Amino acid sequence: MPYPIFDFVLQRNIPNTTDATNQVLLIAPFDLKVVSIKARHRIASTSGTMDLVKAVDGVALSAGVSLLTAVMSNAGTINTNVAGALKTGIAETTIDKDSALGFVFAGTLTNLLDLDITVSVRQLKKT
Image (cartoon, rainbow, N blue to C red; front, side, top):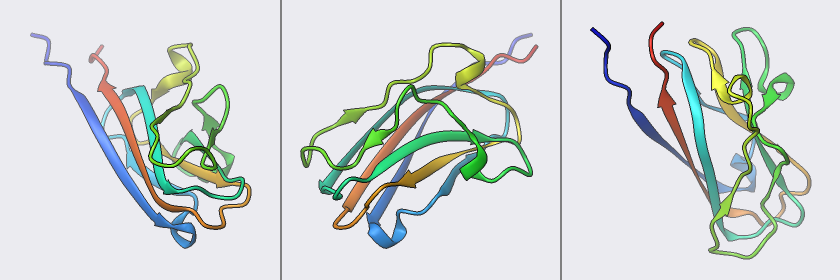
């Protein structure tokens, strides 16, 4: 008997520049597919960027694999939702069980305040 497939919404608030460090959002309890990512900030950074990456056990996020076609800017218009463009291949957006899903920050993050990030993921069918 197949088990139900669930969608999950994961949220993270990065309150300020000091907290905008590479960080894990989730260690996958089962195989997942990333469905979407959106972000918005109250105060823009100077030229900061954020990447959504996956990293297998034992690999740092900074050495992880990007799920996006391009990094997301944290320097755009304030209080505006920004959608990240996910890669299109199923393997490129799949997070294997026990792998980490997280964020890698780069650029000049000065002034960044209240960065809110929402990532939607879907549980994959058991095979």
